[in-house]
Picture 1 (cartoon, rainbow, N blue to C red):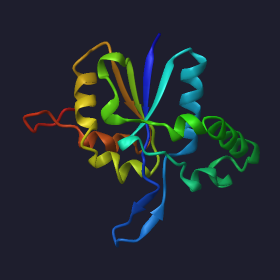
Picture 2: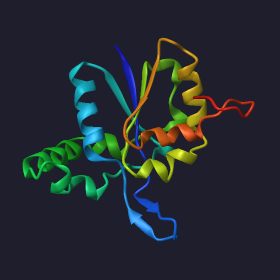
Picture 3: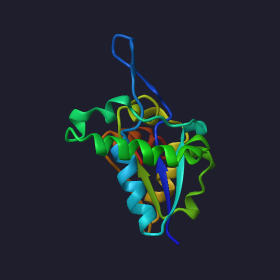
Length: 160
C-alpha cells in the first residue's frame, strides 16, 4: 500500500511584519481535496505537524469569496474536517515520521506554513531522506513550499 504523510502547519497565528498576530492555519481546500484523492486511491495517509500540534484550518479558507460563493462547498469542507477531527487532533509529530516507510510527503498550503514549517528543525531530515530516494515523491501546494526553506544537508548546504 502506498504511504503518504500529509504535513500541515501547527500554527493558528501568523505574526505579521509589525508583530501583530493574524489568524491563520492550513487552507481547507488544499488539505481536503488531496486527502480525499489519496484515500479514494486506497493510500495510507498520516497527518503530521510540528510537534504533533493539532492543525487548524485558516478561517479565511471558509470565506465564500474563495469558494465560488458556494455555501455547499464550504459546508462540505467543514463536514469533511469534522469527520477527521480525531486524526487531526492526534497528528503525528514530524520528528516521529519514518521516511523509509513513506512513499510520498505532501505539504499542505495556507499561510500557516510560513510561521512554522519554514523554520521547522525536524523537517530537513525527512526531506533529505525522501529526496535521496528516487522512488519517493516530495510535493507541496501553495505556501507549502516555504517548508523547503527548512531543508539543508548536514554540511549546511541546501537539500532541495
